[in-house]
Structures are given as structure tokens and as C-alpha cells.
Amino acid sequence: MQAASTQPSLYGLMAEFKEPEQILRAANSVREAGYKRIDAYTPFPVHGLDEAVGADDIWVPWVIFLSGLGGGLFGYWLQWWINVVDYPMNVGGRPQASWPTFIVPSYELTILFASLAAAIGMMVIQKLVVPSWAAGGPSTVSR
Image 1 (cartoon, rainbow, N blue to C red):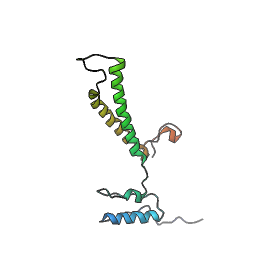
Image 2: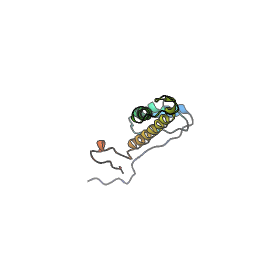
Image 3: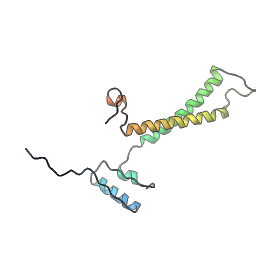
Image 4: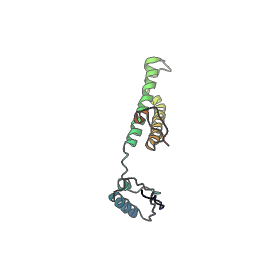
């Protein structure tokens, strides 16, 4: 049997850079060295840093965009359905499908659906909530 080492193992490293080019070079060299779980934080956007650290979560913006688009279309459809099909009412001689009156609620539903998709997507990515289809059972909180 081998004796347990008393030396603590290396868990992570942190570095500070003064120039954006330095952090890009460091991120590229760390990625080329074979490290997979790296991250970089800057107070301003650095062009190319996402590619350098290997951030490939490009599905989140598309989910947010499509959810917002779906929310706007759902809001417009809901108002159209109520005013034209379900409960048509002639108020002041205006047309039944008066699109200018549908803009504000549709816009609000766009924002609501997109923000909910962003919040839920963030929780799924951070593994705060595991969907039941991914966990093989009811949703659980990972610890």
C-alpha cells in the first residue's frame, strides 16, 4: 500500500493581466496545453476570448431568440383570436384585427418569454436544475 500524500494537490490557478493581448495569449496557450475547464473574466469585452477559452455554448442565444419570437407571435395570435374569432366586438367602427393595438402586449410577451428562457437556460447550464429528461427521473437539484 502507498501512503497518502500530505501535499495538497493543485486545484486551480489564477492570473492577472494588464493588456487584452496578454490574456488572449495565455488563454490560447493554456488551451493548447490540453486544459479543458478554463474561464476568463474581464471588465470589458475582449474580441476572440470566447474562442480562446473554448466557450461553445452557442445554443443559449438561439433558445432566447426563438423563445422571444414565439412569445411575440403567441401574444399577437392570442389577441387576434380573441378579437376576431372568439369574441368579436365592434368598438367605434375600428377593424376587428387592428394590429397597432396588438403591438404593446405582444412586445411584453416577447420580453417575458425571452427572459424566462434566459433564466431557465442559465439554471440548466449551471446545473442548478436538471431536466427530468436528462436525469432519467423527476427534476432534482444537484449538490
